[in-house]
Length: 549
Image (cartoon, rainbow, N blue to C red):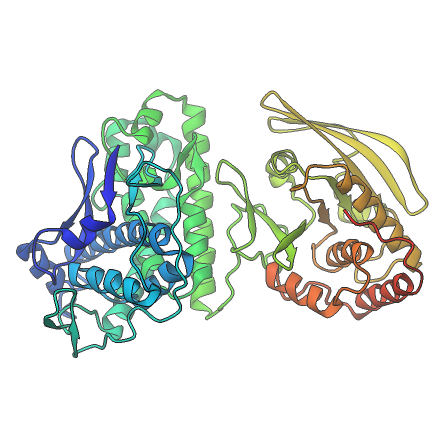
C-alpha cells in the first residue's frame, strides 16, 4: 500500500510543463511522475492529424487518456480532502482540456490558499489500497479528515491560453505549451468515442472459453486486447466529456463486479492480480457467467453511445438489460446500485435532498433476483405495488410477492395479512446468501394506469399505510414503490406520503424534484396531480391525518 501526498503533485521532478501521471511499480507502489522528454514528443506526435488515426498512435493516445483519467481522479479527491468538495469540483472543471502539470498543480494550490485566506490546516494524503480504491488520511494519521474552506472564486480565473501567468515562484511562465486547446480536446473525445464503439463490438464477442485459458485472458487484458482497449477508451470518454451523466454511467459500468472484482480490473493484467487469480481458479460455468456479464456491460456501452450520438443531454443509466422500458429514463446520478456494483433501473426520489422513496418500473423476469436483493440490501421499509391484478394478468406479470417463488439464488415467500378496502397486504420474506429480510407489501387493487383512484380517501389510506410501515423502520429506510412504468402512480403515492407528513408542502416543488431525481415523465397525468391537490385541500382543512415520522 503506497501513500501519495498532495505535495508530490507539486514537487515531482522534471519539467514544470511535463504531463503528470501515476506510475505503478512491479511491487504495486504508486507515485506521481512527470512525462520524460521522449514520451512528451510521442504524445505530441499523437495529436497530428496525419498520424492520429494510425493504430499504434491510437493505442498510445488511449493509454495516455487512461493515465490522465486515473491521475485526475486521485488529484481531485486529494484536493477535496484538503480544500472541500466545491473547490475540487471547480478545479477539475476549470482544467478540463488542460494538461495536468507541476505548474498547473502549483497554481491550483497557490490560488486555493489565496482564495480561502489560508492553506489547508493539515496535509492530506491519498493512500492507494491494493483494491485500487483510495482512502484519505491526514499527516497525523486521521482517516477521513476533511479540511474545508469557503472557496467561491474560480481558481483558474487568471489563467488564459497563450498568456502569461505568475507561478508560485513569482516568475512569469508561458502557458501556451501547458494547456490543450479546445479543438484538441474535442478531437481526443471523438477519437475515444470511435474506439469505444469498436471495442464494445469486440467485447460482445467474448465467451467463457476465451477466459478459460490464462494466456488468452492476458491477451484480452493487455495491449490492444478487447478488454484493455475498452477500458482505455471508456476512461478517455469519461475524461473528455463535459456531461456528468456520461461520466457517471461509465463509472457505474466499470464498477460492476464480476466474481467480486470490479470490471475495470479485468482490463489490466499481472500474474498476481485479483482478476487473473480469479480466472485461473473458478469453474467453466462461472467463466461463462462472467462472459455473459461482460457482454451485457458492452451492450449498455452501445446504448450509451447511441444516447451520445443522438445528442441527448440527459443520459439513460445502464441496467444490464433489466429495464422494462427503453423510453423511461433512469437518472444515472440517483440510480440505485447494489454493493456488488449491479445497477438497477431504480431511482431514489428526494425532496429537499431527503430520500422519500425508491421508484422503478415493474421488475422484469431476468431482473427479479437482483431486484429482490435490493429490497433486502437497502432495507426497504415496505413495498408498494400499484399495478392492479387485472393489469398484471393482462400483461402476464408475476405475483412475485404472493406465495412461494425462487429467482436464482433468492427464495421468497409471501403470506397474506388483513388489508384495507382498496389494497391487499402481504408479509414478504426474502432469503439469500444466508440472510433473511422481511417487509410488508401493499398491493393496490383498483388503480388504473394513467388514472386516479376511485376516491381521494383511497389515496390517503395507501399513503398512510406506507408511512405507518416506514415509521416502524430504521431512520434511513424508505419504501420501494412501483407500478408498471414507475412514473405516474408511483410518483403520486410518493408525493401523497409527503402530504400526510406536511400538508402545506409545495406540490409543484415536489413534482419538479421528483422529475429531477428520476425523469421528466414523473406525475405527467393531470388527473393524478389533480387528485393530489384535492388530498392536500382536505388535509389542510381537517389535518387529522398528519403522520410525522
